Image (tube, rainbow, N blue to C red; front, side, top):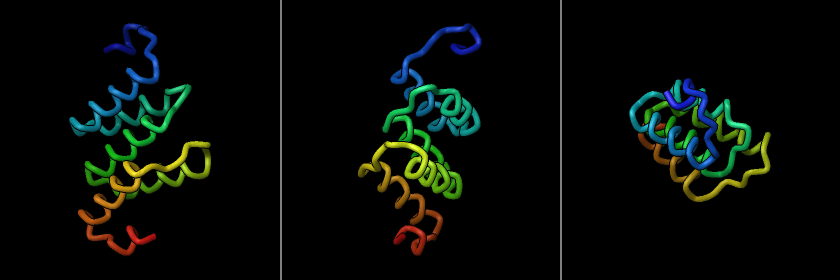
Length: 99
């Protein structure tokens, strides 16, 4: 609704929306917002990665993690790692978590 009305949102507001959509299980909407962002910070990356991880989409979470590492200057923090490890554990993919 906010985007359709033409409101310009800052990074903080977009991060909150990404988190909200992910927590509600609307990963597509959270990903659309993420992809529309002009400036992504570490919170943006953690929101989208943890959102996919918490919703059981380990493959997409790992792809986003790789994108974060190789295509941006953002550094991985403990929240990023914990989100991925929890997703690996839930998916029974412990060997992936060891990487």
